[in-house]
Structures are given as C-alpha cells and as structure tokens.
Length: 179
Image 1: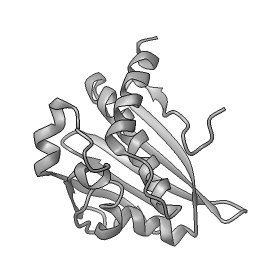
Image 2 (image 1 turned 120 degrees about the vertical axis):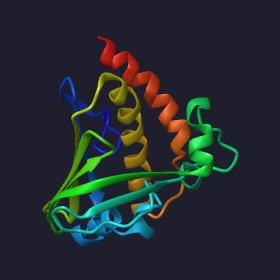
Image 3 (image 1 turned 135 degrees about the vertical axis):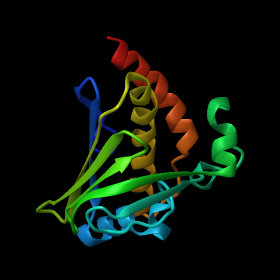
C-alpha cells in the first residue's frame, strides 16, 4: 500500500492534479525548500522569487543536478535539461510559511499548501491547475519524481534518481489517465 511519500497524484478535474506528501518538519524548513533558490535547486529548480503578490518567480531547471551521474533524460528533454532552461512566472498569493500560489509557465498555476501535523511532520499539498491533457502527461510524473527527490533530501539521503523515476511514473500515469 502506498504511503504519502509515494502516493499517486489525484485528478481533481480534467485540468487539475493534486499531490500530498508528509515531510519531516518543522514547517519553516519545508517553506525554505519551496522558496529559497539554493534549497529548491536540490529537488526542483533554482531561481529567485519575489515573495509578494505580483512578484516575479524565476526558475532555472537543470535536472542533471537532481539525477544520478550517467542517467540519460528522455530524448525529448535531453538538450533542454542538460543545458538547463528558464521558466518565468508570477507570484499570485503568499501566506508564509503556509501557502504559495504562482503561475507556472504561460497558463497553469501551482499552489503549495503546508499544514503542520501533531507528530512534527508537515503535510505538503501541491495542486497544479489549468493544465492541458498533454501537460498532465508530463507534469504528473514530473511532480511525482520531484516530490520524491524533495522527501529524499529532507531525509538527508540522495537515493532517488529523478529521470529513472520520471520514466517509470510516466508510463504509470499514462495508463492511469487513459482509463
């Protein structure tokens, strides 16, 4: 039975997916991994955020830094992720250290919600909305793998290989969403 560390994302509607992960707190630590470039690049992407409504969100993705040496990205992503690529968004809402909502790319939105648990863990709820069907095929395994890398780093490990997990989960989500 999957734990919240590896649980599938759930489709809320045709353009929205939600993931939940229990992470080792405290909440300020998780917030830092969401908002600080040096920490965020360990599991997702570097880049600066202006943490205010209307602020800029700049992301620099270079997934070779979160994959094991020698792992080859899928052909469609190889050049982009070897050289790195920039994404720009806008901060839509900030309630530190509990909520961050931002545009992601040109049209979609990502919301991170943090909820402290009685045992010291933090529930991260990530909701990505306004996605096309094609976006869902790529971001679902992407978020699944990124969140696994985040949990890995927060537990002081370096065992999860982003691209290997992404490829495994892409096949899984493709089957899941075709039903």
